[in-house]
Image 1 (cartoon, rainbow, N blue to C red):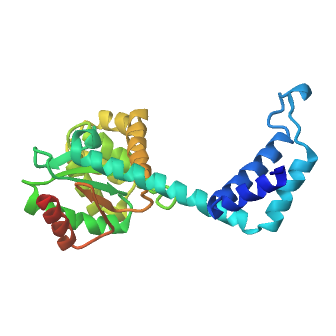
Image 2: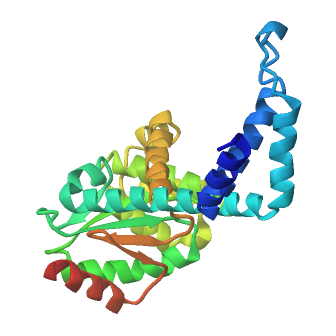
Image 3: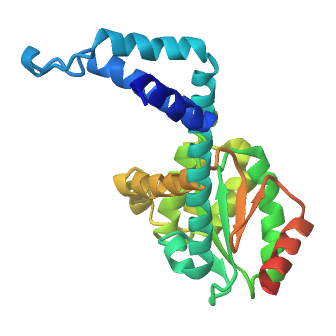
Length: 268
């Protein structure tokens, strides 16, 4: 059997998705090897590609114009699958090792941590403020069974005060007054700003020098960044977002949705 017949048989046997990925890979290799990848590379280390091979690959792609679209779609699907797998692994970790997920974040409610509720919020988000009252009602009813932990997710691209408010809340946490500060921020959302942050700290009898030092510290930024990385791992892009023992709940939902998720977590 000659080389052309071997090529034709192998090519025909490939699945369409594999075919498109292979073609795109070869094309990219050709383009990469026939161009400079670094200004520091010397001329005698460059690799050239035979013109006939490059032309053959280009011709195959011209004859199969769907190759680029199929390759991009296959790559996007692969990325989505990987993100979904990472998300599922994290949520499983939440059930098996809640202490790992909670970390140094503030907690309230049940000490047992058998049912953990993660809240990702932005203090300037109006939907988070709406959800806040529902979370308070939920914890008033089920705080003996549920452990609530807060994760910062300031949407800095659209909310100017989201990050400063998160830093102020983190500073209050260092003096064991996070939840009181959390309530006050959501209840005064229309007044977010430095004056309010100091006012709340004063009302809660915080050490103001420590409060200012903590909220302006690199530690505050690192703690918030850690929460942002967790949100990214979970694929979150909006607030509020909740997880009850691995079950995701998005938006300012009614109390009944929290209760239904709790029932499901309890029955597992």
